[in-house]
Length: 287
Image 1 (cartoon, one colour):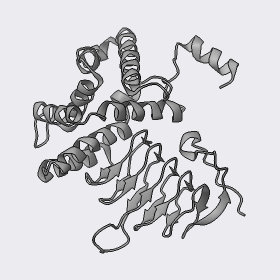
Image 2: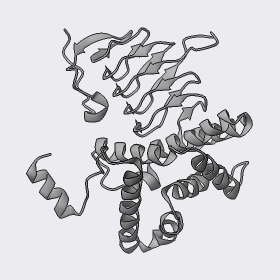
Image 3: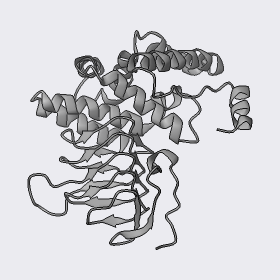
Image 4: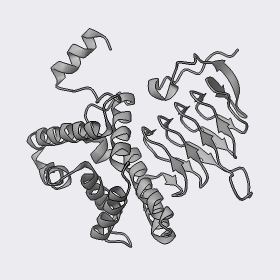
């Protein structure tokens, strides 16, 4: 980051996200403290929203409680009341010792990669991608508790409210950025590693009626651009980039860019490059 940009951020009152080198406990504490400070400032800025911010953040004892409360208000009041949904979400977050770290890394991913994001408060309150991802984590926990009915109910509500359909059995790492979320579909046997970025209308699906392990495996640092379709039990290698509207039917080598229908390699990337982090939408002029 340039000194001029740092100075501009400081003048605007924005703080940088916590470094990933700090411990999970320190990172969670730092993000929670920053978001509470942002919430206090937002109440002064917009008194009409003060009650929501107070109840959702300032009255909550931890980030996990805040997420449970917020998700309950957005996903509850269908077939399952908000209070029941809140208790369900809180049970999932408290049962998973890594839940706080996952939530922090997901929040930090947005701050680092989305140029429109200037504070933690905004994605927490409003971004559908973050809400869909944290809701998925609740459904995933329920699925592995053998509570398929409730798990599928949460999946259905996520789809209805946020426009993203994520099967609760899918395995998704942390530091994942789902931008906009609308039209995102993630199939049952999909595996997504840490630090992946997924834009709107991406499909990670099967390629027919076969059963068993039939969905994509997305390795660390991959960027899946707008409308990309990855179909079948295929692997997208670490640090790869899938272009907008590409249809991927075969494995993608690590550190390459693929584009087209069907997708083919159009450029090779430096090994140190992490497309999911820089969000660069240039896909090369061919090789």
